[in-house]
Length: 311
Image (cartoon, rainbow, N blue to C red):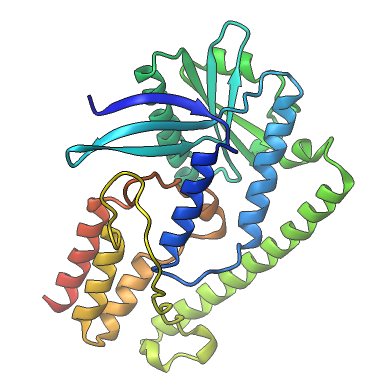
C-alpha cells in the first residue's frame, strides 16, 4: 500500500505548522530569504476573497489540508498537501478547489494537475468528491463569468469531475472591507509597474541579442543577476530520508560547475530555467513533504543543456 492514513485537517494543525517551519528552514539552505513579491501578496488576497465568498454559502470546510503517509524507499513518510478551498455539501460530498490569478494555459494546466491529484487522494480515502478551478482576472474572458460563487456546487455538478469557473476580480472585491480593497489596489498598481518594466527589459535584451553583442558587453542594467550564495542551515526530516539538495538544484549546480565560466552555458541555463513571470509565479505547484517537487525529468533536461554546450 503506497498511501495510508489519509485524512483532512485544518490549516492551523500543529503538525502542519511544524512542517511549514521545517520547509522554510530547509529552503534557507539553498537561497537567501527574499521578500514576497506584490504578485504573491495579491494571490493571497484573491484566495482569501474566494474563500470569503464561498463561506457566505455555509459550505466552506476548514479542513483543506491532506495529511497522509506515503511509502518512500521502504518506509512511510508523513506528507501534507494544501488545497485553496474545500466545500462540504449537505450530502457529505466534497469539492476540492484551486484558485489561479491568471487565465493562461500554464496556470490552467497546473490547476488541473493539482485538482487531479487531490481527487486521486479522495478516491483512496473513499470520499465522494469533485473538483473546481476558479480563474480570476480582469480580461474580456472574465466578463461573462458568475457574479458570485454561491452557485459553485451547481456549476461543479453541471461541469462533470472538474469545473472551470472564471470570475472577474471586481466581483471578488465586492464585500471586502475597505482596508483590504485599498491594499489590493496598491499591490495591483505595483504589479502592473513591474510587468511593464520586465517587458521593457526583455525587449532591450532581445535587441542586444539581435545585434550579436555578447552578454558580458551588455549595459549593466540588462546584465543577469548572479546566483545567490548558498546559505547553510540544518535540515529537519519528517520521518524519512532528507535530501540535502533537490534534483533540480543538483543539476543546476553541476551545470554551472561544468561550464567553467562558459558564458554560453550559463546564459542558456539561466534563460531556460529563469524565474516564472508574475502570472506564472501565481500558478506554481505547491511542494509536498518528504522530497522536492522538481522532477527527475527536469534534471535530465538541464543535463541535456550542458551536453549541448560543452559536450
